[in-house]
Length: 438
Ligand code: GDP
Ligand code: MG
Picture 1 (cartoon, rainbow, N blue to C red):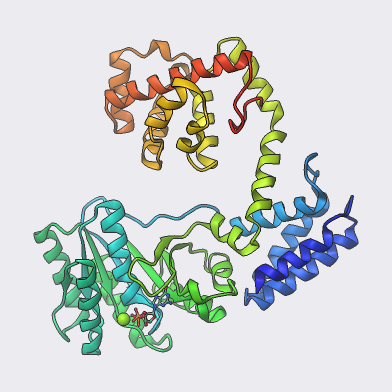
Picture 2 (spheres, helix red, strand yellow):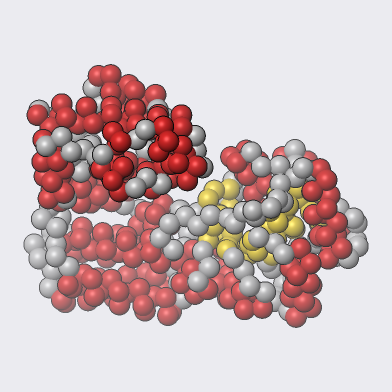
């Protein structure tokens, strides 16, 4: 598989004190072969290898990394950016219901993954989904949707073998009347892209104006999946891709090519036949899965953090001068989040401060709220939070869509971290506090 081939390419670089251009050229040749064999499209491979080579040849090797690790780091970063960088979220309508239209070739996994997505959003986002049977050509398709919907406890709207456009419209009215804030349209597929199918999908699209047209493609079909994505995007316009059957795909070609070829991100992946086998797509996780080098990537990350000594020294002098501002607090939070959550790190901190932060359960939602609050402050307020009187707090609350309690809670956490940081500026920082002297 791709992972083994890439490892072999990197292995040859290991133990080399410095890399010559010939070393890099050889490694790039192997990476190119590995990607092509994984069914990544030719143009994508060519651009990818060119970018990596350029960076590898010109790279300032971080002090603490070997040249081989440096190449892995670059390849990893480029894989992540090839797949779109960050997780792309589904669109949400400002006026409910949000309509998501699932389209794709026959057998791609629309019906099962539409149900999975409904189940996921019901559980994770407390949505109230309605599944809609717009694939009317085979009675079995309607039955299938009812079965999977039933297994997940999600209502299914159907009007038998009627007109899919009318069904979609009626389903939206039904959703409005019954308080379903999410409507998922399971549409018909064909074995190949054809005009009749596209015309039908376009009619549904213009009748209900979906917030999101999600193309479902089968990862195991590699380049064909990418070609289908291109065809659907050209004819209909898609907003994102759901890549299914990733559990059966050892190559990774579709995952790597979709974004670069169509400009449309993969938003969700199907990872098995069970109805809970669905995940949001995270380029970083996919890249490290492809590289199969979790340990080395962690090591590289650590090296990068310690490389950031200049920033750390700066922060230390700010602490000494008692100038740990909300901007610094925010920077720290971003770094903590990038490291994968505060609660774990808080658990390793000594004393009351660690406990208090742990109690704060810094999950994504809370972070987003904090971010909104800090961004709604003026630069002056961030530098000097003591000016935050009640009227300022109310203004910030309104600007960030939060409440004064949220702002007070954030200030409390900031003060805790500030006092903790002050103690540590004199003595030692606990290990694992990024960006701070260790
Ligand atoms: P549709 O024609 O696009 O509606 O496709 P279906 O939803 O009927 O799925 C076709 C087949 O693929 C079914 O047998 C599904 O169980 C299977 N399938 C769908 N998603 C996945 C997945 O993520 N992993 C695996 N292993 N099978 C899947
Ligand atoms: Mg189907």
